[in-house]
Image 1 (spheres, helix red, strand yellow):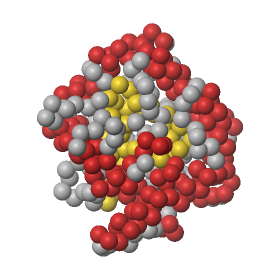
Image 2 (cartoon, rainbow, N blue to C red; image 1 turned 135 degrees about the vertical axis):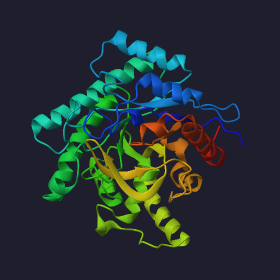
Image 3 (spheres, one colour; image 1 turned 180 degrees about the vertical axis):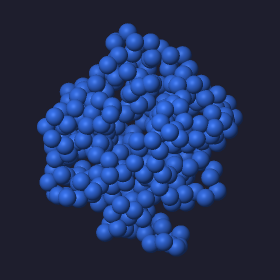
Image 4 (cartoon, rainbow, N blue to C red; image 1 turned 30 degrees about the vertical axis):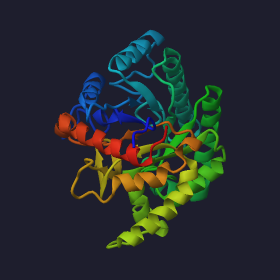
Length: 343
């Protein structure tokens, strides 16, 4: 069946995340190149509807002037795309700093959210952006420092998120906290749920589910005490565990990433090890992407979801610059929409 929603987006940040000029790193891929690769993908005449976008250099200067940002909006619109969710530059080394850090660090975190809301407002007024959220996380790489005082550090993150939520709400935006095993206090399904419940602002702060990252939530990779699935599991055991996890996190889910994972972790550049994104057709992929997406997209319109996005971070540039990569991804996302979409 043909559905108009959710709209299908491609992420621009795979051209940036894990890239750089350090030893063994590949160079970033420009925003325009990522847009062109996305625009070239076509399956039976169907194309991507838009992009999701990381608000940092070299794609975007988060302190760019209004006129510079409007030029970017014009560029994106010229490719036939809308902008959906925006990634706030909350990490140390960008604009922000740890959400569980000292007063100065947490103020940096909030300044990154303010910048993202400003840019969102410009894109919204332009018309290139009509839906989507602003993505955040704890900006604390790794979990060891958090473990030194779990309760106090979770409370610090929650307090920072609440202050960020006030900023977002004043701009008519929502924040989605990305569930990923590398972010302190968000590294397991249980710790993520505890954090969201402590923030307790469900109208403004929700969850971003990524198929690759949440697969490792099941395996308890950085939190063995919260494991839901043992190695050598059966399909029945997998889907029982998957339903258990999604039933807990789906009510909070306001942003969704289609992805694949082969059960391994991967890091590149300054990015700590996290769920390894794989090509959509990777023969070692652990997920039935279409079936698993359905668990997260159940009742999606009621949670304000209007689009979904492919995420494939830390792929080699050779893979990213191969047009077949994007055609396969688009084909997979069309299958997800065909199975779970709405009008």
